[in-house]
Image 1 (cartoon, helix red, strand yellow):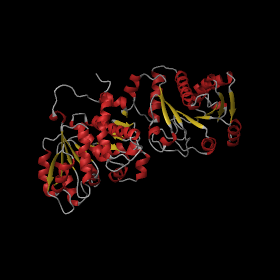
Image 2 (cartoon, one colour):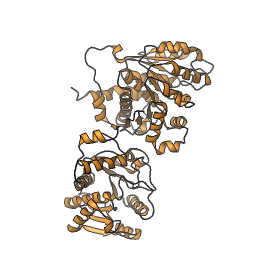
Image 3 (cartoon, rainbow, N blue to C red):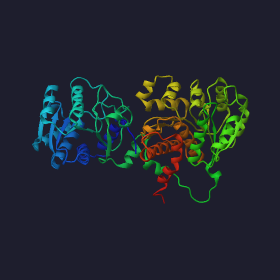
Length: 522
């Protein structure tokens, strides 16, 4: 499934209507029906009787009117409120306004906030349907419409009214998830054909509630061919790309991951990364660090190979070990570098000299990202595939912008960093973004607060390395690892507790999640 911006959805709409010839009225009819069906599913007539449909002057208002008809036909008591003069309703919205009037549904107009308040108070609905603005909203909501939205929100908190958004909560930017002045705080959003960026990224997600996606007649082939190269990373997608193991195999079949990580006080990071690589199915994993840590690592995870180098005064790998690191990297499938590596000038020099001489796929994480932030463009010349896995704070350092700028447009920041370094970038967080410099993008379907804990990123970097080692195309490998990591957290939240599970727990759960991918495959 694709994830789209408001503009991309509008382009698809236009192609469907004007090039294929599917009438806009048909699409609106199906959209309104889809909203009505979900309203009755979540809020059955036995408990919720009175519905207020608040319609703006555009197509979103037309969708709301169709929904009103179907709910009325199901037995709900329905009142429609127009927020503009009737002459402002055009095209399909006007057609449906005429039908509403012909059916003699209760129809009111509110051109001042006092009128709306009085109607809301006197009618006292159980459900308010927000059909004010759609995905095309680009500027801040002000004046009359701002007052309307705030009054709708107040009804939710004062009188426990259920709020349903048509397509997207009015006031949420479909392209970024930012709030344009104010926004309806929906309990349920029913969107059409494809999820929008604004449904998934905060703070817009907080205004989305439960998200339902209903088909309205877009041919799947057209969406695949004309939609953006931006995939929703869910179970259906993961099953499509996952390659079950068959036939004669051995440990060499599934690659050898080298993890260069760990220093005094940050020894656990390397172990977690190696554990992620093992649980992700890499045939062999070598954890390379200082000689002192090597002795510890040997006893912690017996399944890993280890290597030890001379350490500097800070307990980090010494620059004197450069030649040995280059030697051990020979023949390896991928290098995961950075978890707990250290941040001294000596380690920085080691890192930059390594990336100037290595030629195997790289996964750059944690301390290595901080080191790279001094000169991110240096990675652009690296010939082999490379993956960067920053959290927002690391993205701030790499892009030299504020955290506010990163969080306002995570998609654009991922793209910029990807292009700057010619890398695959994973901008971690709720609904993590994976962006490739060739324009492909993946957005995780998972938002799991329990994963907000130290060590989780280390497991993810090892997991990415594991799928690259198993010869998955690097972008697909990265997306699959992001999905599996999130799904493991989701599984633990459901079966162990909403939070408090550790990065080790997540790594250990990966095979359980993999089993779900293998199911239903021939």
